[in-house]
Amino acid sequence: MADSWVNSAEILGSDLHLELTRAGSRRTALMAAVREAIREGRLAPETRLPPYRSLAADLGIARNTVADAYAELVAEGWLTARQGSGTRVAPRPASPPPRRRAPGRGSRQRRGAAPGGRRGPRPAPRPVHNLLQGQP
Image (cartoon, rainbow, N blue to C red; front, side, top):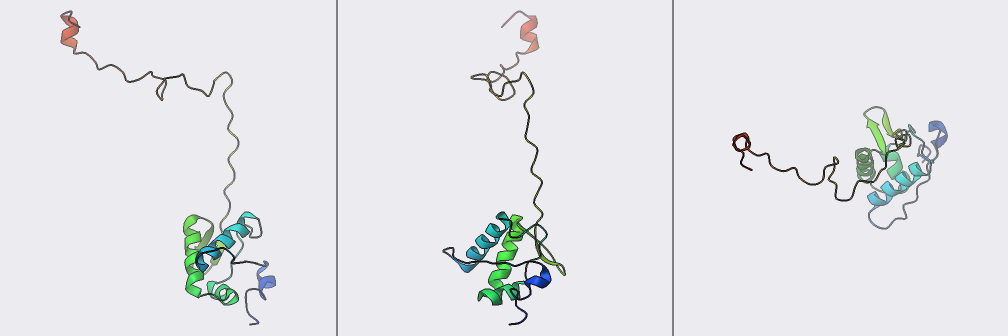
């Protein structure tokens, strides 16, 4: 067990402590643990994760369980994966700057106003020939 993920953490520059305590399947518990580690900052963006075979051996679960969890976390945007480069924590998007309101403009719409500022639907256009003959 000299080449396990826990023992090779110094080589990869990271130590990953995951506790699979969540109720439910092992895959769900692993996914929750990885998400929590990312949210808490224990797994920084671009951090390389252990190969799924190594992590599965360390956690005592099936490698397909780890592979499925990684695949779902990639689909959710938590991780990135490229063949030959391994699986990494996805870069976090920069938070957008706070939106400012233009001076003098309220954010409330008039009561009864439809989106776009109109009050209800527009009346149907009347035929031009009726207008020319003086009929409503």
